Length: 393
Image (cartoon, rainbow, N blue to C red; front, side):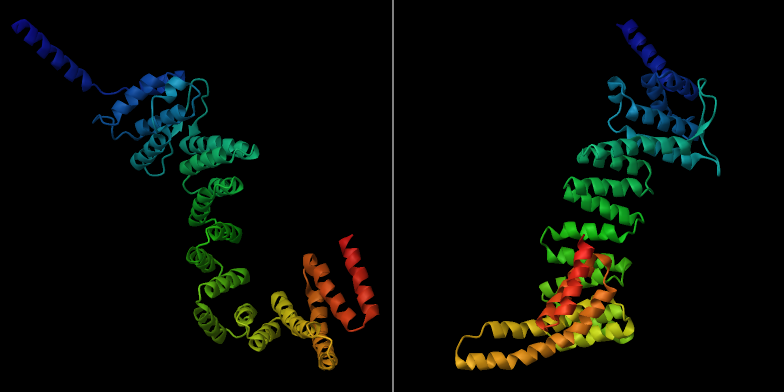
């Protein structure tokens, strides 16, 4: 019995002594070169807690490379050696950097390739590995897979924006809206400040029919693009729907007071008055915007719409009249009023056509044809229609 106890004690001493042996980091590198990853992993994992190697930056660097191999290998047996090889690899690289001498760059050579490859190059290659798979999956319309691979690439390069915005596009294309929102936000947070990203994000939020969330999204976009007309109009529309029109009007009136020559602010104020049915105030605001910038298309267009609506309102009254003698008299009395309103609208729409973007020109000329026709100006109506036909060919 004593002999057995003595033997057990001896074994314990032996194992204790073995556990204290310094892990052979260079051997681990050689094993990695040969593709013997399991044994290399055993050595490098042990080295992370051994007092003689745990502060060795090169060891952590090698460990990072090892886990990159475990992450990207096609060998199922090696893949099973780690639950989260990517995170382990990046944490190892980070620790290696913390322990490196200032200005030092780790590099790696093998007998097969004696040319040194730096850690930065290796991480870029690691990033490209997942990024390129993401591109291929996206092109094959495998949107969820594309999102996952772009996300992996973004984890490898935390400052990168291309992988993140591509993840957003892939998610958006695949109608994976929660992922799309997450990655649009992430791209913006990383510095990819693009108005289209905000508009895409706002559109997705708008699908949730939560006006407060939509307003928050628009407000965030306005922090980056405070002078954007479309965002301002979107905000105004949301405030009106939320019964917060006084807030919108107060903010804009204050801004207009501080910068009266800003056509965009005058235009936004005109939109508020327009939506509230204050036609005269809306026209006054649009006129001030046009005074500040004669080619301000949105203000010119909205003014033209109001002037034409004034004529159309009376035309509707006229069309709703009956056949009594009083109705016929009223019909005749309204005719010169309609003609006057159309004459007031005509030069405005001629101006609108003149400054119209090419894509809007034909449609705006249709309004002009309508005005000319109702004013009995057949030659002008015909000439304008020919221009429309030419544009549409």
